[in-house]
Image (cartoon, rainbow, N blue to C red; front, side, top):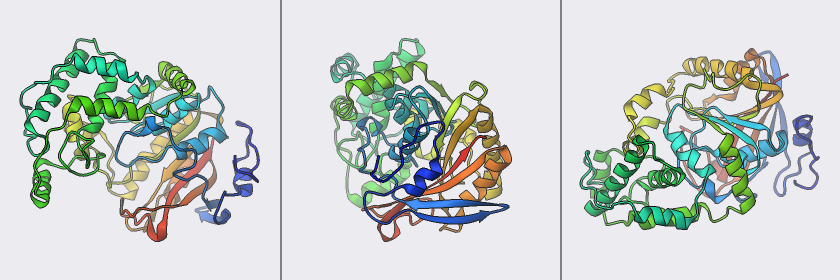
Length: 416
C-alpha cells in the first residue's frame, strides 16, 4: 500500500476515506469533485490509483479478448473490499480477468458470460499444466488433418491449415466422447488464442491484433496491400511457447490459489439478467465491464474462434446484448442491477466500469448511477483512474489517450 494511504480492513472498510487520503506514488494528488446526478450528489475521485506497471500483472492473464480491462483494475477493488475466501463475481466475464485475478488472490469466484468462448478462455487457466505435459500431449495429436470445411487459405499456409484441422478434430472428438481433460482444455484455449495475430507467434499471416478476426474478404485485401502470402507456422511449437509464456510468472502458491478457486468455481454461460444458479446474497464483490451499446461486434470478431471450437457464431451473436440506444442499454442494465442486488451480500460492493462513448457525448456513469439506486444500492463514488500511457488509440468512439493519458471510469455501489 502506498505511503500516506490509510490501511483498510475488508467488510468494515471505508473506501471513501481511503480515496480521500490516497497519496499517489508520483504525479498529481487525487482530485475530488461533487457531481449531481438526478436527485443525488456523488463525489468523483480522479487520480492514478494503479498503473499498467504497478505490481506487474501475472503472465497467466496474457490471452487476448476484445474490450477487456487490465488485471490491475479488479485487483484494486479485490484487495481493498474482500478478504481471502470471499466470493468475487463478474456477470460479463469476457476473458476472465476479474475471476482469474480473484483466484490468484485466494478468493472464490463466479463468472458469467453469454458467449461460451468466455469459459473456453477462462476455465483452463485455473488448472495450468506444466509444459512437459503439454508437449507430451501435443506429440500424440496427429498433424495432418486435410483442408478445413471453410476457406481459410487467406489466413494460413496449407500445411499450417492441416495442423489446425487435425487439432480441431482431435479436441472436438475428445469433447464429444467426454474424454476431454484439463490438458486438452488448456491446449484448446492456447490454440484459440493463437489463431490470428500480427506476429510470427500466431498461426496466421499478418492480420489484425489477436482480439478479433477480420472477414476472409478483408484478409484478402490486407494480403494484397502488404503483398504477403501465408507462411508455414509450426502450431505445436507455438502452443508450447505460449504455454511457457503464460506460466512463466506463476509461483507455486498462486498455482495452489488458482487450483483451489477453480475447483469451486461457478462458470456460467447465460444472461446476466437471470442467474438462477447463483444463490441469494452470496457475492461479496462484483467487478465488471458490460458491453457498451453497439460498439463491439462480439460474434463478428470471434467467428474464427467459434469455428475452431465447434460453436455457432451467429447463434451466439443473437444471444449477446448489443443495444443501439442508451434507452435500450439502460433497460438491459437495469435488470442486471436487480439481479446483482439479489445475489450481493449486505455490505457487499459492485464496481461497475463504464466508458465515455460516441465522441465523449455520452457518459454512461450518469445513466448507471440511477439504475443502481433504483435497484436498491447506495452509490459510494465514481472513481476515475488516470494514468500516463505511451500508445495512441481510438476505440469505442473515444480518443481515450489524448494528451498521453488513459482512463478507467468505475461507478462503485454498496448494498446497504
